[in-house]
Length: 382
View (cartoon, rainbow, N blue to C red):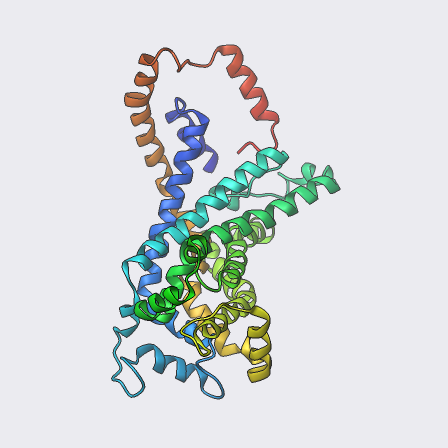
């Protein structure tokens, strides 16, 4: 079924150069991830605020979840009236843009790095879409026999570097807006003025290191761990859209967030450290943050079941369903997108290239045959 669909897509878009085809798919998938992430994050803003308070030093002792819920919906200072709309008051235009860019840029960077490193190293890219549903036992049996140490090292370096770079870029886009939502717009503006950082530091925002570490973990969970485990080890007869949905949620909850919660707690405590002291704001010293956390709450400073549960409530609705949305929902619109791009390219771009002095030329029969031979023998062909 998937092979027939891929053949139809290739036939309908055979005039598109490979570079245009690849760029169109990356742009479409990235935009789809951005819209999906922004909508789900906004709807779940109360859950995000609860998780932020739970993983900060503003709650301690017993009943931390109750303390976090009270702070989340508290309107104003201590003793103020509670309102369901209070968590949404800290959401400015920058947050909406940052949410969109956070997921779209994360998806785009991961795809670009994955494809670039796969071609450079001569290894297969990460499985995507219908590939997750394919039987891999017979398909990869011959390949597994020829796997050597060098290929293993290449694959390991790629599956570490791709989500690491994606996580860093995601933090560069989104961390500042996350910090703004944590402090509130007015207080964060005062802190930025007091810190007087250079433009790059202002762009990244406070606690960037902890934020990028957390995003690396979650990017690895969504784009590496979930698709690899599901494709290779999930029972073939049980594979479906529903099973991928729940499998992705399970990996996110019990693997990704179980580790990422420590970095989320470090991020929250680092922001509290930056806002404490004699001045309006101070630079973060991670060693002091960790030492103070252990001195005050011990291991509970960075991991408790309530902290993990609040993190799951905030993150799982979007990040946990991302593998399902990315691999099952987005492919449904790819054929329409490619047909539209093909029409634009054939009707506008190609004629302009021909008029521009022959910079466009159709591939010769010999070149086409050579290209087909390379594709057939390439380990990175999709």
